[in-house]
Length: 279
Image (cartoon, rainbow, N blue to C red; front, side, top):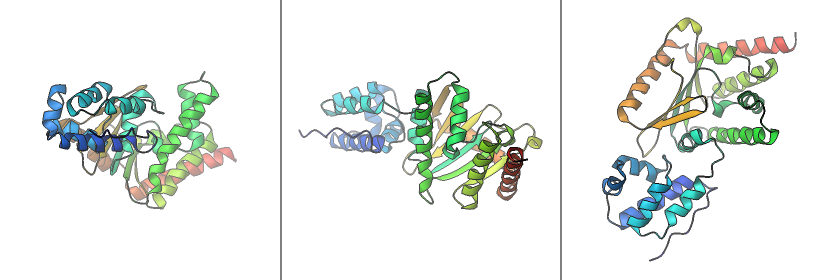
């Protein structure tokens, strides 16, 4: 039989690998449920692999090659995809983010990565790894800034962020770095590219005090929720878990300032940092 050619991992690789999986599965006349059953994964998980919203792990790839008679194609390309420019705990979430139609994120401590400026991102990574070589910090900053290219499209994905007031008040870098970072977020709001709400300290206890949460929805795959902590992260597609955190996010939005009030606060705090830098 004709073998599919190996993919170029630099060009939307998961989507290409998923399309090949769907093609091979349909050619073998297997349902998503039948393909996933021996791996103890659901048909919806196979659908997420085909849609490119989940990463194909090597054990799955080897199974697909054996069942679908693809001559090692999935295993070879899966190994290529494993070489990610992102930290291991975040790689799958970053790849899902790249194909999401909507991203809703609660940030308790830092400006979300997709909204960070180069100097802000550098200050974050240097704080995380104070003894790292400069080349490693450069790589981390470059990878983070590449994620921001998602916002080059004027409409997709929809990005809605709720920023805790501590994000605005905690000085990352110096005053000039903070002023630049907050004004960058404000400019995206003023250009109607993103929605931002600030959650003030006065709001008190709220539904997401456990940490950062990112909700992602997709055109042809179930939604995902990503939880992140120091050096850790977990992607979850359990419908009950996703629904619970969607409710929590809705409650956050209800407790936060309106978008207009949030923009005013962003720009006011940024102006304070400007005055600190230039008394």
